[in-house]
Amino acid sequence: MAGRGLLLVISGFAGSGKGTICKELMQRYDNYAFSVSATTRDPRPGEQDGVDYFFIPKERFLEMIEAKELLEYAQYVSNYYGTPRKYVEEKLLEGKDVILEIECQGALQVKELFPEAVLFFVMPPNVQEIYNRLKGRGTETEEVILKRMKRGQEEAETIAKYDYLLINDDLNETVTRLHETVNSARNAAERNKDLVARIREEFVSFFKEHG
Image (tube, rainbow, N blue to C red; front, side, top):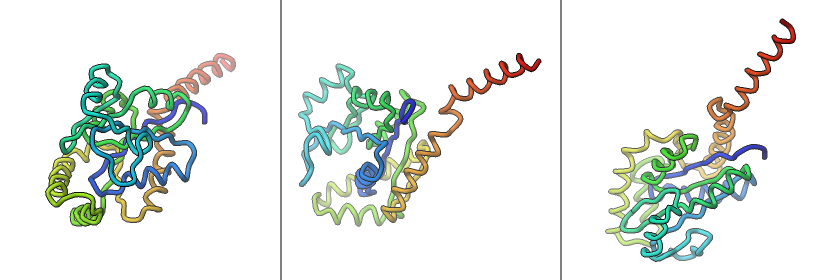
């Protein structure tokens, strides 16, 4: 792949399936790089350190904030989440499209630092489905589920700030739509200023020769 990659930010309600979407996208296509986030929360069953997240103590996370080692960070349901900066910048320079699966607060931080970032918000078809999926996990208490639902209500206020919405009703279709949208975004005039400038210069040269 030629040129600098796109920075893709994927957020969504708890239970929206955003993690599954990202994994499927990575399996299908080779032009993506997934940025593993750091978090202070405990691993869920089956999660691996350095694969799903970097699971680190709160003290170390706060040190990373102080040292500006994070591209963004946010606090969510009593835990911290953040994106290590170095990996993201290296992969973008390699031409990879880097996926950040992060919460809304962090997503908007990234958009401020990288206006060219493309933001996607993933959601189930309706609010009841959010609750059903969280309940179906069987990994959290009713109290925690209700906290996540409350947070979802807060997140709904930020959806309009995202570039694209993804209704995740069918995983296969959702992944396909996401990939197609990324390809369209890559061709946006705003993201091809060098090409536009070159074409303008070529016109100037053409008419100098053909006075």
